[in-house]
Length: 397
Ligand SMILES: *[C@@H]1O[C@H](CO)[C@@H](O)[C@H](O)[C@H]1NC(C)=O
Image 1: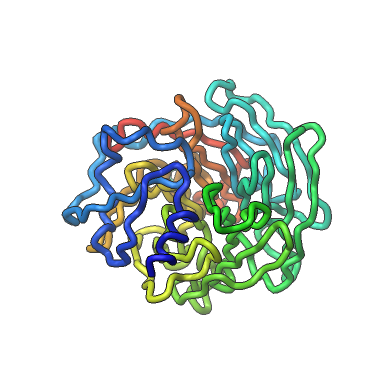
Image 2: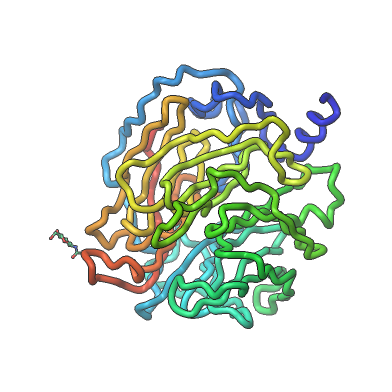
């Protein structure tokens, strides 16, 4: 046990402090925020510390901020019937966006915090043999893994047509692109995260370019070694399943690793879950049980999410255009809509959310949209895909 613990710690921890190995629910109240004397948490979607002390669980989510939260459109594509599915914030703050329709294109938007509205992103690359890109993550400095799929129409995936790619952006003008593997068993491959931190010394450096990829149709998470192309099912639990017989059978969607926990959103069940994983292979830890953190009662869908340094989970709802702040607790958690609604275009068809990086961007949440093209607002209203910046400062500070 001691040896296993050491290995997990070496793998799980980057620059953040150690997480407890307590698998119970007592550490689910993730706040209060990091101690004042702790080093400033890393910006953006990297691992955040999970407090070790058990906290009282009667914390009610109450925002001091004026709602809805302030927002602005950073960029909107010119064409209607466009869908941007995901984004990744580079260490320099620039944003990579993956388009899911009509083209499998990767875009780069520089300086999102300072660029005036309308500044055009750069088209980095359009991937072959696919109509859409989905999840993206950095697997090594300036090297990214991304999911591609074939689509017959917007959001209508072609069975067996998914693949994982690697793209190196050391020279943005001359990206190096390599197909890692086809993944024909994939149903609807969706979210993608890097498994190993750079501090994962017990995994060979080349194999640290391993990612987890969610499959929303099949209710499971693959592990893909982007170095060798080898893949296998890493986690498959009922809490990842779609609702049986649903019109849109979407289970596990957004995924994220914080400490040694895999967090995920279940779209159909509109719920957030986590389970402790073995950081060397991405499988559930022996004896680990799945925790349900929050279940939303009044929304149609739960898509991607990010988790801030306070432990608040920021999820987007796609089908009803909302941003929801969620606070996990053993009593079922609390949550509130902080921006958007089913009758508004502000976050029309919002698909993913990631915090920015850098001093002025840390509390800015960047949100991509699909323009409500599949579930039009008020039944008929759609718009082109866009990138929205939401100011979350003042929320639970
Ligand atoms: C949708 O309908 C509601 C109720 O009629 C209205 O208040 C709202 O402005 C409409 N939304 C849009 C984007 O037109």
